[in-house]
Image (tube, rainbow, N blue to C red; front, side, top):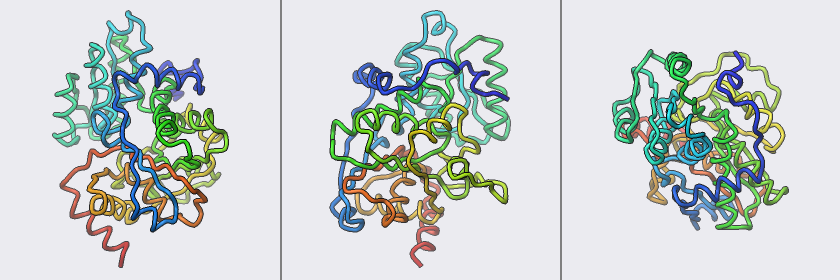
Length: 335
């Protein structure tokens, strides 16, 4: 299935100028999230490290940026028909809140096993939630059928140039906060975040390095980037569920190959240790996907040649019930 064509995403391209436009349009709506540093972290890795705190963005993750800019591009006729998507996490909340801010009807399809807290949060932002199936794929397929019936605009979580442009505003914002950054470490799921950041950063300074980070258990973009054919099926059971995507996007993958300098992977134990590190040292809660970039900084520090390193903390919507598992994995890593 040609997902990009089915969702109506072929056409416009992703450029630095488009991301700059997104930055200006989003200024009154999104939070200009903090860029913080930590002397302890700087000393450990012998680099100046800057954390971009998108866990403090509205809805607790960066997804609000892309969803909002996407909705801003719709015509009045499209807005009247509403928007639709499928998600069990941050994208659902980002679309729901963006829709409420812009006065648009939103319908979100979610798997039946989605935690109640995420369902409730999405509903509280004003979206209609439809629970379908036992997996994201089943929810996605049902949402596509509904889209055909209603004519609502499908807001894809990553494979959409407008969504990518919204996410790319993070890089332009960071470089206004600290223009010495020479490297970005960015989590990768479907590739929307890193595509936007890579195009934006290299538009400002072509010498900035972009290093993507994937969970070792589900590393489709890593495999594609490095031309690796996996010998066994990828696992989706990772504590970094926000980047547990089995395939990169049809639009994002070419951008990743063109603009990203490298992709590395991190283990479950390394991600868990990064979560606990930030919680203990910086009193900051990161979800697994949000901790991936920091985990990579610690795990691949000698490889990452940087003096001023930007680490994207992509989200903080952490399931507190997972704390015992995080501690167990972190203890295994330090043993």
